[in-house]
Image (cartoon, rainbow, N blue to C red):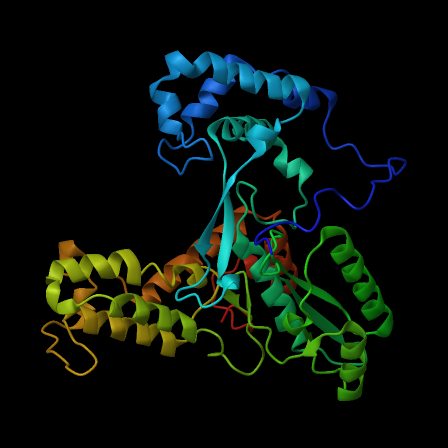
Amino acid sequence: MKLYTTSQETATWEINHNQHWQTKLSNEEKDSISHMVTDEEIRTALWSLKAFKAPGLDGLHTGFFQRFWLTVGGSVREEVHSVFREKKIPDYLNRTSIVLILEIQGPETIGNFRPISLCNVVYKIVSKIIVGRIRPFLDQLISPCQAAFVPGRRGVDNAIIVQELIHTMGKARGKCGYMALKIDLEKAYNKLEWSFIKVLFAKANVENCIAIREVLDTFCNFSGQTVSEANFRVYFSPNVDQDNKEALSDILGFHQTEFLGKYLGFPIKHRGDSNQGFGFVLDRVKSKLAGWKASLLSIAGREVLIQASSSAIPAYVMQSNLLPNKVLEGIDRVNRNFLWGSVENKRKMHWVGWNKVTKLKEEGGLGLQTAKGRNTTLLTKLNWRFHTEDKAPWAKVLRLKYCNHQRLNSRNVDKLPSSRT
């Protein structure tokens, strides 16, 4: 058996060329993308690459080409010109070295590794030039709902939208029920197809379930993705009765769940449990500091470690959620104990109060930030983005759900319930 191959070397479907596709770019913009590459573009692309990234099959990293450019520059330019002239990458440039990297700590199966391809430098130059030409037009070419890989957009944006929809579903009343489907299409252990996670929302009825099932089957057929229905979950709003839940789950082939877990690394909160899902943040902080022997580090060394790692770990989740006080206090407790050298079986005296330690250095403290203070700072940044990125889908969702003109311009504290807390 060959590991990490692909099940499909060519596409299994044809695009209908008679279908009308709306033009997104003007003729001038198209020309700016498709014109012949210049020598200066090639040189700029090469020097924009990091010198000592892992090399491809030829064993030559970028630093070699940069150091000996006067010698090898001519042949590199000719290779790149040939690719753009013939609109085809030769097979020898397309060959890569596949390396496995860890997806989790303590891997136990081959599925805990992710394959990456190490490309040669000429291939990287071609890719860099193409990306540089397309980048100015990404906003026009990519849907506003696509949050990743576009400058100015963030993965947290779609996580906010998902959370708001789940929050609204939890308060649904009446006859019209809703469902959220978490679709996790993982690659098989011996395939190269990439995994992805989607969260779909729809009205909970038979017609939608049949349509979703058909689309999913068709997509898997075309893409070669391996479907593991054990990882598919569907969450129903409270106003869908149990009989309907079971019937719709059977059509979808999904397992019912009361908790959807995480999406893009953010826990999806459900109604009724404010602490649910955030314990992993505290566990990660503990795990990070447990690997260090506090007794071998000075106070200054422990301070640096807390600043560099322990305080940074929760930041990703904090940027969109107000963490429960129990978790925030737990993070501070772990940092306090580590700072003063306490271990699980032996506590040490805390010679200075935490409220003084967290003061600015100019005020006599160490400049450490409390977990709650950091959380508040990051949410303040989210608030700033909310007011400046008014056309972003996530901001539109929050504005339409919670805000009117009077509330936006008011300085009074508003007690309107929110999924952010």
